[in-house]
Amino acid sequence: MSKLTTEKLAGTAKAPQLTELESTLPSSWYISDEIFALEREHIFMREWICVAREEELPHPGDYQVLEVYGESILLLRNESGELRAFYNVCRHRGARLCATADEAEQLGEDSNDRVPLKGGVVNGQRIICPYHAWSYDLDGQLLRAPHMTAEMGLDVSSVSLHYVGCESWGGFVFINLEPEYAPDFSKHIDATAERFKRYPLSEMRIARTITYQVNANWKVLCENYNECYHCGPVHPELCRVVPAFREQGGAELDWERGIPHRDGANTFTFSGTSSREAFPGLNEDEQNNHKGDLIYPNLFLSFARDHVAAFVLHAQGPAATQIDCHFLFAAHEMNKADFDPADAVDFWHLVNRQDWSICERVQQGMAARVHKRGVFSPMEDWNLDIRRYVTDRIGAHVPPQFGD
Image (cartoon, rainbow, N blue to C red; front, side, top):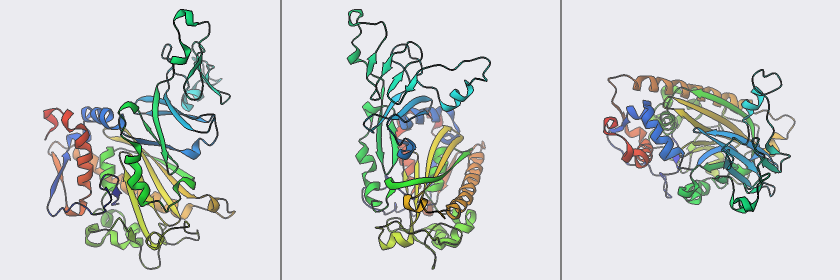
């Protein structure tokens, strides 16, 4: 579905005036391990990427161990309630500080060839290395290295865990794996924050999460999300709720004001209606129209008057992407005895699976030896923005053989 992205932006919602065919990125950029390695280094290591919702770590001492593009990251809430992120590695000998949930389960009492280890985040107050018991506070500062003294050359106050950039907006947590090179987060998010300021994102809660494994490149998923030329053939149920998605091939959609539902409909459900109240403070367009955003490189947001569908992408390889789809609702609606998100969740689950299926077909087809590049039609104008985003970041590093 066509979405207004963070970089099209600078305040306007006008699509590029594409009146003729434009080429896509080379097909090799979607299927090559070498290209994916460049994207990992120059996009996912250096850009702000969404990894969680704040509500998943509600209390001081709460933490998660994240696998982020081959790096183990410790995300936690410190004793002051602030979010912090670190590489999950001790400054002494490099041991992992905390096990992942899967590793902890595998090292349970029934394991025959490994045993559980002490350490990790202890009592919600300290991070202790399981190897030599070096201990850190929840801001990453080394507190104690047993049996080591200043006379040996260790200045405890000068040692801390390797920091990861950590920011939040709208209840979403973003990290940057190379904080010394990180772009300014406010510039990254301010345009989106302004456009959707009337939606109470930070106050919403996850009612349900569905995790999908999709055999397609992350850019294919972004391009699919960013156009509605495909909506008529792929999403008949969706187009019954929002007929504009199939009219003129999904062209000339006004994403600044949002896309109107059919008469009598105002949300994304099979009926186009819901008994849930609209979020307070929405303007007239937001009460009746669907709005969306793509926050590069890995967060899709789709806004309805009563819920938000948030898609967090985890690129796992040139042809593999995990997608966590969070369904967000107002807390006061979720507290009602008769709250049931199924009308929205079931609708989205169908639309999502339609998208994933067609994206996998694209991925399969691009691997054909005869397919060198695709084309963008005028109805896919926003995808020029994705082409530019990727080219700006890796284009100078791509070997010549991947140019066609």
